Amino acid sequence: MSSIDISAVTKRYGTETALEGLDLTVERGEIYGFLGPNGAGKSTTINLVLDFIRPTEGEVRVFDLDAQSDSLEIRERTGILPEGAELYDRLTGRQHVEFAIESKRADDDPDELIERVGLSSDDADRKAGGYSKGMAQRLMLATALVGDPDLLILDEPSTGLDPNGARQMREIIREENARGATVFFSSHVLGQVEAVCDRVGILRDGDLIAEDTVDGLRDAMPNETRLRVILDRVPDDSSAALEAVESVDGVSSVTPEGRTIVVACEDRAKTTVLHTIEEYGVTVEDFETDESSLEDLFMAYTSDSAGSTGVVQ
Amino acid sequence: MSSIVVAKKDFRDAMRSRVLLGLIALFSLFTVGGAFLASRVSELFDSGGGETTVDLILALQTPASFLVPVIALVVGYGAIAGERESGSLKFLLGLPHRRRDVVLGKVLGRTAVVAVSILIGFGVGLIGLVAFIGEVSIVDYVTFTLVTVLFGFVYVCIGVGLSSMTRSTTKAAIGAFGLVVLFWFLWSFLSQALLYVVEGEFLPDTLPDWFLVMNSLTPDAAYGSAIAAVLSDNQFTVASTYETAGLTDGSLPVVAEPWFGFVLLAIWALVPLGLGLWRFDSIDL
Image (cartoon, rainbow over all chains, first blue to last red; front, side, top):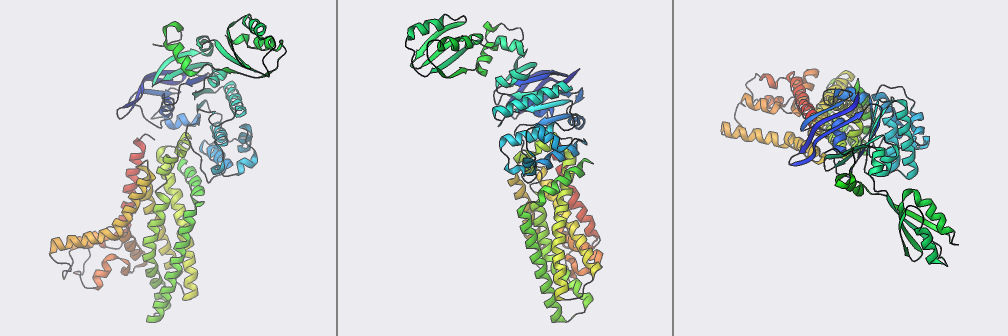
């Protein structure tokens, strides 16, 4: 059984088309990542599922219920972290959670939820008007978890979170999924979707251009990484060092730029490259990799050479 | 009851607004001022204690029929539009509440807010009354207060109704204060102009029924009629001014009758609220 079933949905605002004939199915029990740049139509899709907006054409079903006429029942079983949602400035964090509990007629302990999302009880006593974006996001997640929902809909959940917060968010998503909840979450950051999802749909300009498993996604991703290694100094025998790096299995090119060496290589070769350089008596001060960008991924899925089986249309 | 949950939350939230506290203070000032004026007037005319409560209520009716709409509209105009503008409506509707529960909850919550400010204002007025006059008909005063709360409810319905129809608080505010201006200034001007057009003179010997009807239609006039009905004292109605001046033929049209004030108040509450509910249910957030 599917948790979300969107079929042939078009949404137009006047002459502008936000979604064009979208078909999308989220299976029960999976973590579905909804990936696409800002403005691709991710929030529009989520707003349709939540009945915040109504489709121009097509049908949206959740738990096999009609998203419009059965919206109340759907929202009773769903936890939502909407994008661009604001809290009530004059109410405290705890009052928000209590309100969500009362609204869902659940019996959760507000303090437990607050602690789970990484807010302190001091934070919970403060008015939400003084919260940072990250704290607001955590609080919103706490309200989404109320009543152990069957479905979690998270729209750009890591907005405003630091890396540690984003990691906690992912942990909670996994825990909820392990409990049996279906998770549907959108992001414009590839890494977050990749880290936690079972299946990924890629949306661009209101079109679902690909749907794939995360493994399929990884295969489709350009597998070459550009590794920039910053050394404390240029090695004494620099040409020998460069040669040694070049000969590492998986490295395709090496370019020195003063103290920095740029290495184009496969992901698996990264560690070997760093060790090899250090054998030449220099210290690696810092290194960074260029992550495959979303644009590269689009290229991979839309160009013929990708040849991925997961591509729709 | 989903709307009760929303109302409770909304009441908590709205009671913390500083603007509201300012309005309550202003309102209290007016009721004390009204009580003081009423005491002066009653001293001048040396009327008895029973009369003075009615005098006070007369003195309070004018500031109340101006300030209660202002308070109720200030409290109501942002109820839905403000939440749409800020995005908190997505949080609210992400929880299992029907859209109509949200609107009704807002009406209840904000009516409670307005009721609290009226009770505080009139409570202060009562203290003033006891201090200045010393003798009060509590029953009349409480009845008057309750009708005023009803009047506040009507304007909350108007404010929340307007707020449900638009995405912009600016538009809702313009609508709300446009109504205040319409009812307070334009309405009598329009009816006067219409009288001149129809009758050919500004002050005919006997005013036509339609003129009395028109002047009894506004929520503010309906409020006066309703007070007159519960206090059995016709001097609160709009028509009474014309009656005293001998400008009526002795019989009042139904609409200008005191009891009809309640019917008008109900219409003024339910029509904007109904339109707001209908509109809010069909829009994209």
